[in-house]
Amino acid sequence: PIPARPFLRDTSDQQRRVWMRTADRAINASLTRTTPIRRGLEALGAIAQRDIQDAFTSGNWTPNSSVTVALKGSTRPLIDTGAMRQAIRYEVNL
Image (cartoon, rainbow, N blue to C red; front, top):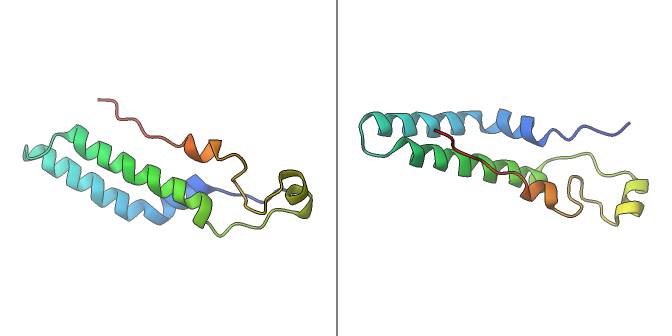
């Protein structure tokens, strides 16, 4: 079987406190009118995007099988062309 590589779930579990503190600061700054909520949410999105993208290279993943390495030419799980990693984006809609 192919091993799980839950980069999104694992990162969310690991970074939940950081992301919640960032969201709390954004909301509080918005309520005190020191920073627009959009700016705070964009900061949160940028942090989450970076953390999730970093998980591709820093995750403790089960190595690729020898068959996968032979086909792909790389031992790095989750990264072939880098397209999926680069597709991780955030969007703020208010």
